[in-house]
Image (cartoon, rainbow, N blue to C red; front, side, top):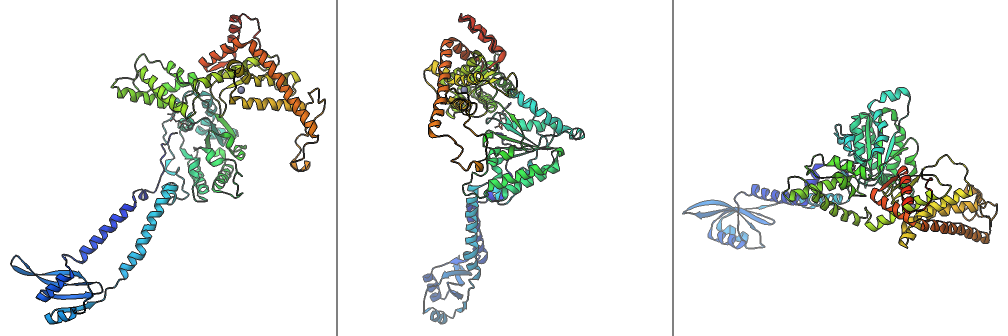
Length: 623
Ligand code: ADP
Ligand code: ZN
């Protein structure tokens, strides 16, 4: 993530360490000693006694701990007076000796108040303060003490971002969706006059590094409005109430600067579903979230403040955040496909000297799964390698080596699929698509993709419904189950093993089968009976245990019927895919090359594959 917005923090604490205090203290003591006793000779008690006896001591002041005074000194032939100090020793004869030598002497009462005060109050407090600072630095941002509640966004409402849509590449769909927001920020009056309603909050959803922050900045840059940048985790401080105060402060500032954009990165750190606190209390995060909701409801979007949030875990968000009037518009920022990656590379090589024969398309082809941040990193890495090799321009070898390095790192971090995983995903998705093209009652396939979309899914197959459906026949439902099973069966047919990736498919297939048996009365054995009672509220049905109005035996039969539907579908799909194994493999191969196959291309591909496999199976379904 781009972190150009540094934390504002109170400057002194950073330079304020225990060492500074100790040094200052030592300096202070030396200074004091010097000022109070300039040129004082420190002598031992025995020396002092000797001098008294020799008659060299002129006068002395005897206090509790010390004896100070003047003595006569012989230096280079002449005598001169010098001050001295010695530590007092218990000596009953001292007064006698002084009297006998005729030395002027006086007792002194030294007031220990200042010293006591310093050592028993000032010093301990100073030490405590130092420790306190130290601990704070560990736990939270240094600023937490001095800038309570002042949002860190404050001074950094950026006016000239210098980021435009030209800097953002490869995510054209997201850009298009944000176009309207830019129009609105540019001329809010126009929209207001028309009475149009503009969204208050836009949620950018996508994997880390796909360019969400960049996109939000580009929107501000394009519209020429100030940009407030905050991270969700920054709101949540260790003091209760600070986060909420920050939110309030941020919205106040934004209000003054409208039209503007507030960007909240890592919204999930702030907006995790509430009620997860086992103590049942309102914790800090919850308070902050509530304040955010209050502020979002409170202001009028027609004023021109747009809140953009970013998250890679939308499913974690509190549903209250997604309600109308809040983050009700979601923009998916996908991982870039082949063309997208090429476009992003083009943006980032602008300031880099490249050798002539460099082919960015082939670089893009070598980097499946890379997101924008990875590609920016790649260009940088390649340039560094070229510099290390004393080359004048970056060439293909540098790119290749940089890719190898980054790949290894990303695979380790599980952000990239390895070769085997890619093969499995390609066959899995091809399996879904091939079944969808082969069964009679399926919606046409619009797109197969190996680029992970959202979180969790490794690839996806999109079907386009031909019309809105309110009723579905049994045959249609069975086909739908078959398509869902297609992915897993394909893995089994090709690799003779199954992965964990199909769990969601199986869940959905089972769900449909369950509905068929329990609600739609589509099972011959169970007959035309509904076993589910719709959405009756819990308290009416009498608590958790209720809701089942049939016996254990019936429940068993229902389970068996569900299993039978799934098993039969499974056999059907398996027979189909074994028969079309060659076509399946051809599709998977093409998918691995291109990463994405659109509906039209799929139709052509299937026709070709059918021809080359010499089988006369019609491919007309894939329209
Ligand atoms: P996110 O907020 O989604 O984690 P960022 O916006 O912080 O990602 O992206 C980090 C950097 O990666 C950006 O500053 C930019 O240099 C680069 N980058 C990411 N996506 C793109 C893109 N689509 N086009 C150009 N550069 C990108
Ligand atoms: Zn699947």
